[in-house]
Length: 142
Image 1 (cartoon, rainbow, N blue to C red):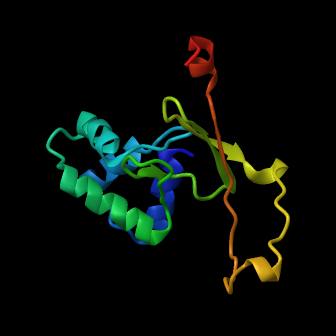
Image 2 (tube, rainbow, N blue to C red):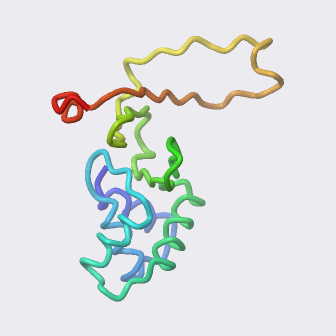
């Protein structure tokens, strides 16, 4: 997911793209992006040194509320922000270093949850998290 695609989506929705918001959107550029707010702030400061962490949080919260960025929480640490909301995907999580990567949902089949097991829930979506060890950690014997 590129920031250009995210930027275009938010402009189409009428989100006023200020220099600060542009810096946040640009910070979310790339594949397998799952940054914390502090990481977004560090990247955004490269383009706009005066941007505050509060401004980054405000922009991220607005993007999440719009459904253009997903807030992801799989560990006890801070939330991460995933701009890849346009493509159905699941995640791979390295339990050693915390690396979080997207994996296409197309090859993963989850059987429907029987009504008796839903406990009254109306299931709208399913997300699969694969936990394991990434190649770099495995090669270090971590």
